[in-house]
Amino acid sequence: MREPLAKEIPLLKLLEEFTAILFKDFFGNEILPPCKIIKNENAVWSGMASCVPLKKPAINPAGIKIRYQLPYIALKSRLFAQSNFSEALSTYLHELAHVFGGDHSAGFSKGITEILDRIIKNTALVEDFALKWERVRDA
Image 1 (cartoon, rainbow, N blue to C red):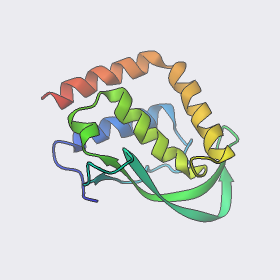
Image 2 (tube, rainbow, N blue to C red; image 1 turned 180 degrees about the horizontal axis):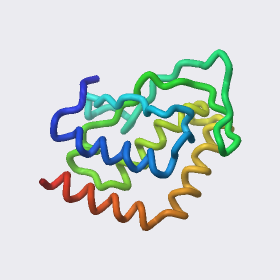
Image 3 (cartoon, one colour; image 1 turned 45 degrees about the horizontal axis):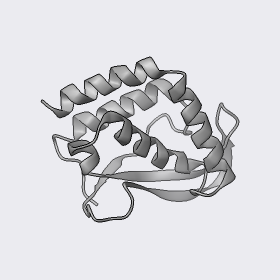
């Protein structure tokens, strides 16, 4: 893992800004976990989450149990260099959804379903951020 490079930070800030608008309090924290960069581009996954079980699970405003704290998440650098906003955002939100459980858990499934519902209902916001992403990435 490494810290984001100067050119990756503005793109990461766009992911965080989008998430703060559409998912306020959804992931259980006012502050999103830091995002690191996966050095190994040959890794199987495009992202990963570090999960620490909560001693006392909480319930988010959508009624989904938050089971984990995420000290950090990580994304492959190619998501910032080559990908479009939707691929980077979907990977970022997938990793954040691990506050609800592992990939095959019911809580994670509920979280992903709610995320998709909010995205589908807010396509104009997604389009706006996709344009911002392209401008920042190509600058």
